[in-house]
Length: 309
Ligand code: NDP
Image 1 (cartoon, protein in one colour):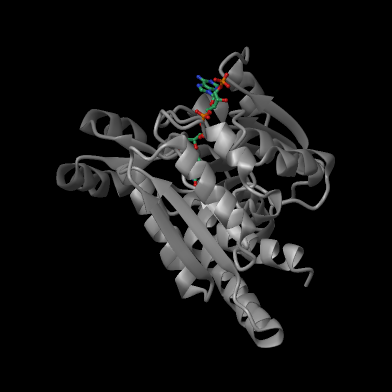
Image 2 (tube, helix red, strand yellow; image 1 turned 60 degrees about the horizontal axis):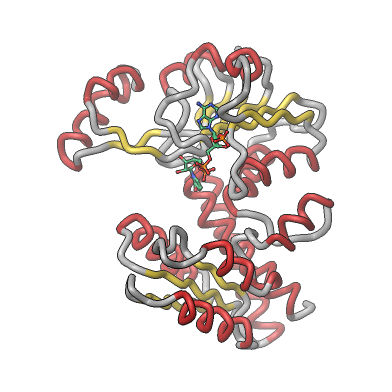
């Protein structure tokens, strides 16, 4: 069996087109454009790339965006004051504080300060609680993107065995809740799970959100499963790349390592997934693209909810 690749590009473009139409409609009917503000502290290079992509995408879709960039040495009090200021601004619909924050700033404290109505990352405990109880909520973008990919691919979720590997507040737990709300029978695995291959190989839908390159291998993948790879990891070693990539992909990956020093891989061994799964989301070009698209969708949802339209 060769798995069908589920392209994040196709689905994220579809969502972006829908969001752009909704933004245009809001502007025409209600006379404003939703507004997203991204707060970044320090010089983390990955954060700079992510924020750049978020701000650029917002602009492309007609969403007003602001990027507040503070130096690494900014005090916690100053960041708190900035978030409070954004909470108070009536023109701001979405606030996103890019993680990680520098060590001297308490991330949880800052995230809990964001007005839940403007919490477009969906990390505030109020939104996490509303999601758990099945009420309307701003939902974390990555797991929401996974659900979009499954649904738009015509993959049945209701009644299926879904296994989520990873239990973070950002991905694993909300992922499990969203699958449960779609009527899957859900199992959550983590580093203390006994017999991980046994549990995973029984999954119709397997979502990997672990943070370990190519960790999920053939023994974890049931024949014909839908495998969703959330992980984003760097592989620098050509020998490791040879374990992960099949002949059709290997030369390109080795060339990328040669040129950039690394290539991106998910938490699933792509060679094994291609051989055993029915569906597989690639890395790069998979769920990562959905995360940004869903952030835009959340910004419009936040604007509609808080402005009651
Ligand atoms: P965390 O580090 O917060 O969580 C990782 C989870 O994996 C933990 O629950 C941990 O278990 C579990 N885990 C670690 N080792 C094992 C193991 N050997 N067996 C089983 N479970 C294990 O990571 P995140 O949830 O934030 O991110 C996960 C991955 O997704 C990362 O690669 C990250 O880069 C990527 N990511 C991608 C996004 C995207 O847009 N595509 C967005 C966000 C994240 P335990 O709780 O027991 O420690």
